[in-house]
Image (cartoon, rainbow, N blue to C red; front, side, top):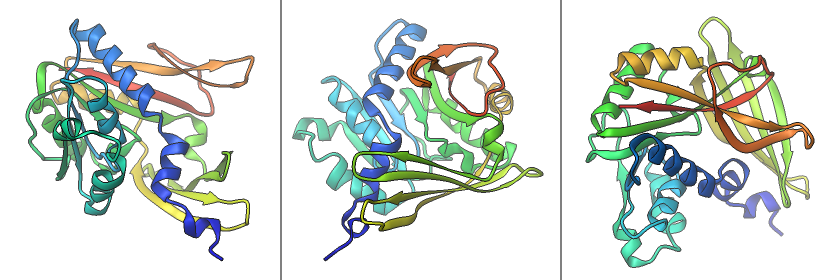
Length: 265
């Protein structure tokens, strides 16, 4: 008999563990409406992986269009065959799954470019990061928004494992190694199951841990005229994070925090 780990789809486990695409699409729309005073129609999802944000985007209105870009052919096939399976024929026509490098790929100009789940941290030098930001700038309409996320806090510099229990599995976030000289950070995601089986190193990330001010400086130097930070709220009664993000210029030196970065063209 197969173990639970052998039966599991690691992409489904990932999405259940770390993604809330309904919230993200709603947040993107809210931020754009607030900034441009019109509804966003077009989205470019860089480093799209399974493309769940783009799938949700085209479902949200009959005019919505999305360009989902990734360098991994395997995950793009997954997006085509699995993630978008519940789209109808007309919706699929508005979802463009693109094999390409987000660093340099020239898409049609869009209202929003998103680079979330810290994916842009693969760029470890200021020159490479600014090259990506400059390409993003060119792919945005004149009132477009670039939406990124980041995490930090003093625990982000530590080697640690965090476990989160879900109904049928446990999600393990493994900050495996950190070099304080270069800020190189190697992380893994593991999944553990009730029958003691495990998907070890289901996902691996080789990043540079960028600070918010470094990101802001690179965005400004790449042409973006304004950069705002939205920090995740905290429910003191429940002792947990909320799904609300607040615009702020100052925050506490917490052990861990999550933020969205909103850059305006």
